[in-house]
Length: 555
Image (cartoon, rainbow, N blue to C red; front, side):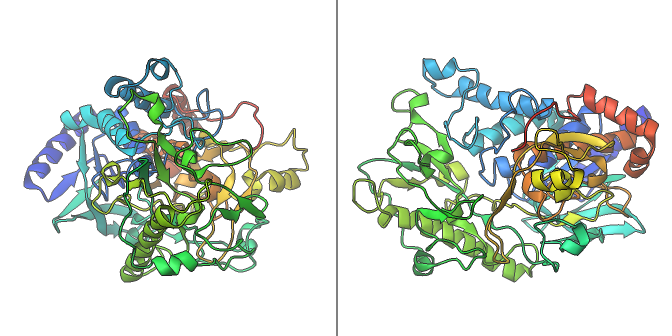
């Protein structure tokens, strides 16, 4: 084995010089949250890795999509991998090392830079970029890892049930071919699946296929969760940072969603559907406030990524908040079930919605003091790393999904569906137990309004496991899923799509690829052989992946 790896390193080095071909142990297509975790796992086990990324920032949800981590309440103690907790610790260390924190903030072991109410670690996306780059740096320097940024897959060489190579294209137009015994699809929308002929599903499966209580009678392949073009703003009192009126502002200012069940009025307002009850819910927006008032949600604080009171006076002109709310969810079309031209039209529509929301907040939104608009809201394109101020990549909630060896359905993880399926009471029921578990996660089944006109589907779920079978396609032998493209449904995607779960999915995929290279057995064989599966799970546990939950309650 040692001689083989030396051979691959030599070939990869010469290919890098030539600039057209790469050979490696595992090719990871997509450098988002799951892709980075997959790379770290494979590198930890000594594999030679090529990692591609569509933007110039690795990290996906955490960075180019600008979404602060959505996490379950136990994440500081358990319910995530050791490597994910290291990432979180490095975020806090980065602020302590590089930012002028107050003495009080510096002394908090659980420092939350933004003190946003959505997460215990709301922070600026470029900090995640720096931390993830640092976690991979030694492998890049040692020649074990090659990262191809601004690069997308365009073709695949497939023979029978095996992928031989994938051709990727840099934004400059230069193409390179990556050959490997194993490939991992960690793209945001399952882009490798159609290129390789891997069987997949999109949108909403039918109740006939899945038996899920919340599924429709007929399949709806184009009914996909909304995406969001996120952006960051700070608030500088007394200044005017009003942007030019967006091209589509008139449309979005007057837009009333046509939803089932109904949305309570205009999208650009502070009245929205309660995700759980679907009744009207009033929120507020006040960028000058320090805290949420009793019984109210101030959206500016919800995803605040920099609380200026955690830093030395003058370090920040104002608090910084990340705008990823129902008011800028885009559901008038989707991105991966369309022609490139249609997808581009909808992406631009998502940007116009976000710009229109900002302009409305700057000029027309009602203020608590009776005035209109917050002119001091400043678009922070510098924090997004873009000229237009919007995130480098839209926040993708739903991907193409493999037809997998195991598909997780609502009856496996939904609280009410699980109680009905098992006959057990709320205090005794647990999620489906998988003998091939490679990780765990927890989040509500949280589906945002969709391109099919559905309002929220938000139901309680049980802490769950990630079965290895959900990472393995039914037919293709050397491909693994490492993101939202695993074997889940439109419904269960709602609880498998969050940051620590995607990280765990990716880390497990990288570790499984390493085990396949090490043993010479493909993932399907490992899963179906009890001795091989036990050996894999033993290694995963030793590497800090938790495979089962202690007794905790539903969310």
